[in-house]
Length: 258
Ligand SMILES: [Zn+2]
Image 1 (cartoon, rainbow, N blue to C red):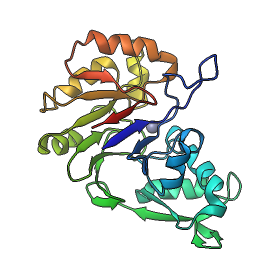
Image 2: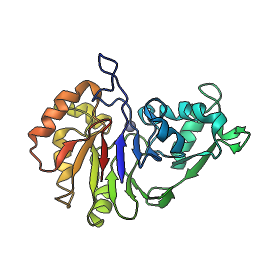
Image 3: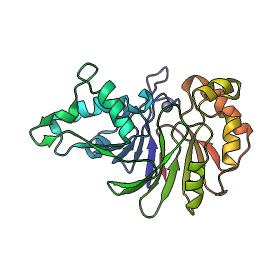
């Protein structure tokens, strides 16, 4: 299975930087998990193939690229973009994004081939298929309704926390899976901003360390995601200081073969 976190920021030379403003993971070049930089950073091959987008929650950094992606493809789509999300998330994006004021309501529009946007709602705890992937949604502990995912192609599987603070249910589900190939877990703020992390329901290296004690698969590679770009260096340094084997930062843009 191929996994890539798409870039979302630029360095002083105009090239993709290591910082992550937006969240968009692409699996096997054809399924997107969150759509933060979907329109802005996909390759042309990915753009041709991605028709399934799975959302963790409705925060802007996770959905910003979705309206632009559908807009870019509008005339050329021969099948709709399928957006998988909880009913709470679908309600928010229909009310606050696709409301004709911020952007057109694509769910009511068609091109010459038919619908361009189709919603597939799921509840946390449920499993569903997105293309060749079996996806299990697991509730996590964020400021708004949010799910993490357990994703499998039948051979390889990984778990992704999305944005979250301390949690238990997610770890129970993840621990029940044997031989996970990767765990992607958030760590947004440095330790000094522990209070802000708590208020906004995110993790710091200190709280991440506590969370990882709940994870029972000691040989599984663990990758840190969703680091706030303005605290990138500090969080990277503090994560390294935890000296946890198999714990690394997920590199923006890099294609991982799980
Ligand atoms: Zn969020």
